[in-house]
Image 1: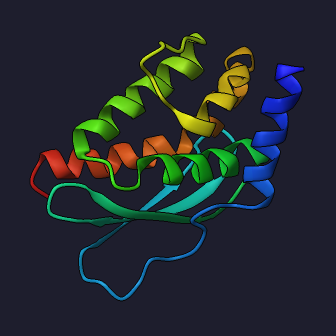
Image 2: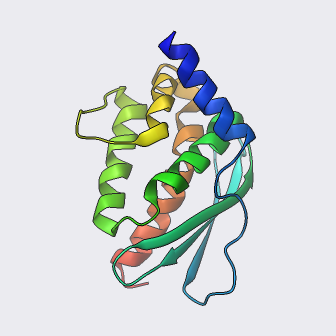
Amino acid sequence: MLDNLYRQVVMDHAKYKRNYGELSGQSDIYKIHYKNPTCGDVMVLYIRIGTEKIEDLSFEGEGCSISMASCSMMTDLLKNRTVKECVNKREAFERLIREGELDDEDDLGDAASLQGVHNLPARHNCALMPWQALDKWLEEHRNGG
């Protein structure tokens, strides 16, 4: 029954994508292009940075239900978070997908519903796609970009 509920959450995010579309009108928007090397899913991640946190995120892209749901879930989860919080969420999500583990203190919101992807190694990169795009921004941010 829980698997069915998780499946419904994933399909809802895939069909009714949250935060879908380009962020525009501000000069402080980062735009990250990312292509899943294993299946060809593509996305553009938009990030608007405030003084101490990510103020807004959105995405555009095409891909499977898992990758599009993951994009939707991640953008919801990371709004109004500090960089440190984003890094912590990113590490928790990677553990969820790669190892199937979710600690009690890891609040991943709807993204926790992707835990079943752990059993589908060929789909790991689908779920991780938006998080890997975020990695590109985090690397630039660490290097002063």
